[in-house]
Image (tube, rainbow, N blue to C red):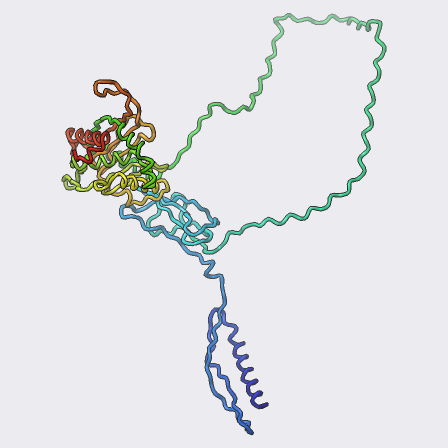
Length: 460
C-alpha cells in the first residue's frame, strides 16, 4: 500500500507541474498529451504499471476588448432618386447615446433620413462636418460600444461640525454724547467788513461771454429701433421645392378656375356622426376625407385631369388609377405624401391613411416612397385661415385643388337670403392638356359631391 501511495503522489505531482506550465495562456490554450500513470499493486508485489491517459485543459479569461470596441457607422442607402444629402448633427463628440437613439439627420431633396446609433456607447469621432455632403455608404461617425460616460459623482459633504460655543456677548457701544447746549443768543450785529481802497474794475454786460452748459451725458437706456439681420442656409428640401415650383411656372400653362361650396350638409353630417365615428374607428372624422373622395370621383369622371403630358415622347399618359397627394406643412417645408388607390376607398379608409401619413410627417419619418408618384394634389390652406388663393401645380401632375377656410356668408337659397358656411375652392390646371370645359365640369362635380354625399351612392 505504501508503494502505491508513493506512486500516486509522484504522478499527481507531475500533473500539477504540467498544469502550472499551462497556466500562462492568455486567451485560450489547450494542454494535451500529458501522460499520467495509474499504479496497480498486487499482493506481495511492488510492481507499478503505467497506463497512459490523455486529457485536455482549456483556460478562459474575460476581457473588455469586445465591450469597448470602436465601430464606424456609415450613411444608409438612399432611394433611387436621391444621390446625396446634407448632415445635421444632433450629438457631439463625447455624448452618450443609447441603442436606436438618433445621432444625426441627413436632409435630402425629398425628405430627411434619421441615422440611429446601432448600439449603446459614446460618440468617439465625427467624420463629417455639420452641413457636409454625404452619399450612401459614406462613413459618418465612430462609436465606442458599451463605454459609459464618466459621471462625476459629487463627494459627500463632510459632516457638519458642531457650532463653537458662543462667547460672552460684546459690550454695548458707548453712548453717543449729547450735543452741546446752544450758546446764548447774540444781541449785537456782526462787524461790517472794511471797504477796499482800490475801486473794483467793472466790465460792460456785452463784454461778458456766456459759458456753455455742460453736455448732458446720455443714459444707458438701450438703443431704440436697432435693426439686425442674419442669414440661414437653405436646406435641400427648401431648395428642391423652390426649383420644382419654378419649373412648374416655366413649363405649364397654368390657369385657375373657382367655385364655392355650401358646407351645411357635410358639417351637419360630421356633427351627428363624429362621436360614433371616433368610438368605432379611433380617429376623428374631418372634411379632408369628403374632398379626397369627391376628387377621386371627379377624376374618374374627367380622366383628362388625371392625365399628364410626357414631354420626352410628346404623348399624353392617361392613368386608370387615382393616387392623390395631400399637401402637409412641416417646419422644414411642404411635403406631399400620397394616398394610393383612393378610387376604391371609403371615408374611413381615407381618414386612416391621412392620419397615418400626418403622424409620419410630424415625426419626420416620411420616406421617399411615401411621396413618390401621385396623379393629383389637394392643398388645404383653410387650416391656416386662408380665404382665397391660387395654388401652383405639383409637377409632373396636371392639376391641383385648393381648399380654403369655411366662413359664414349670405347666400341666395330658394329666392331667400340665408347665412350659410361657405368655402371657396380653386382648381389650377395645365391648359396645354385640360380645356376649360373639363376643368369647370371637374370642379362642379366636386362641389356636388361635397354638398350632398348621396350623389356617391346614386353614381350621379
